[in-house]
Amino acid sequence: MTKTIKVKDVYIGGNHPISIQSMCNTKTHDIPATIDQIQELTAAGCEIIRVAVPDQAAANALSQIIPAVEIPVVADIHFDYRLALSAIENGVHKLRLNPGNISNTQNVTAVVKKAQNYSIPIRIGINSGSIEKNLLKQYGVSATAMVLSAKNHIDLLESLDFTDICVSLKASNVPLSIAAYELFSKQYNYPLHLGITEAGTLYNGTVKSAIGIGALLSRGIGNTIRVSLSDDPIQEIKCAKAILQSLNLRKFGVEIISCPTCGRTQFDLIKLVHKVEAYTQNFSADLKVAVMGCIVNGPGEAREADIGIAGGNGSGIIFKKGQIIRKVPEDELFTTFCKEFQSLL
Ligand code: SF4
Image (cartoon, rainbow, N blue to C red; front, side, top):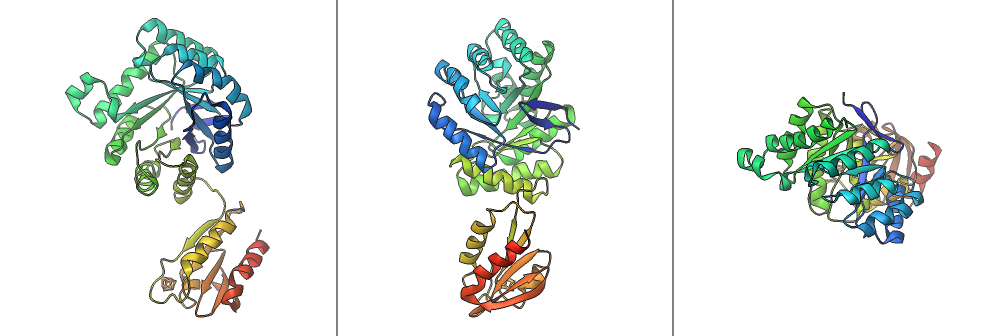
């Protein structure tokens, strides 16, 4: 089991639930826009938010952003130790920073001591695209190079008695990322932040993230996740929730199962399933809902669903745990389903 770190009121590691993170794509110095986006993401289910801190204006903005939002805020800092010091002073709850990238030991020590005094954990974020030259020369872009790169940063922090650490080993190549996280987890018990970096647009990025993050989580590796998509960050939260729910690691309300349709389907199932999904996502009940394409096979195939709906030629049925309870004309199917669904709440 990994060590646990605390980020404001969210625990990462040990037996704590796998938390969901995202990153703002607003300019951090645009305070109202950043607060709005964090609030939207929080409402969607984001539990930890990261913001870029590329300059002093962004570091200063944190002092107004942090008190205005509920969830922990992580400052993403690349090289400038002064920005890290300001971010901590301005109330940030965690730093994402690779200490080896800060130019001199005195400056690293200043950041680490301040993080220690404020109980601020540091995430070491290894990215396959920015491995140190000497490691690349010896090991190429590989899991070994990524883990050794993490080791350099960890050694530096540990030499200063700092162990409030979380690590990520991201690559856009899924097998490489999986191998790096696996290798790391055999050697260290620091909690892991999982992600497939530069995963791409909504469709491909979702697939790559689900495979990479899902493979690791299913092997018991990973403590917090961030899905990276070239899209609205709200989509990252939806994807993260679906990954966690698919692996039975977290429950986020109603689960929809639906058949892929086939030659037996005699109505517009795809339209209906979208309607049912939009309706049921307003409820947080732990229920499984099935939307099936035919009356003959639907109830049996979706026996494990708490409630289901199946359409036919001009009429449809509502079933519960595989048993038909109502038969109704097609135009009443959705409203009847809604009533029956509500009776289960
Ligand atoms: S439930 Fe009916 S329509 Fe859907 S895939 Fe199965 S047999 Fe085909």
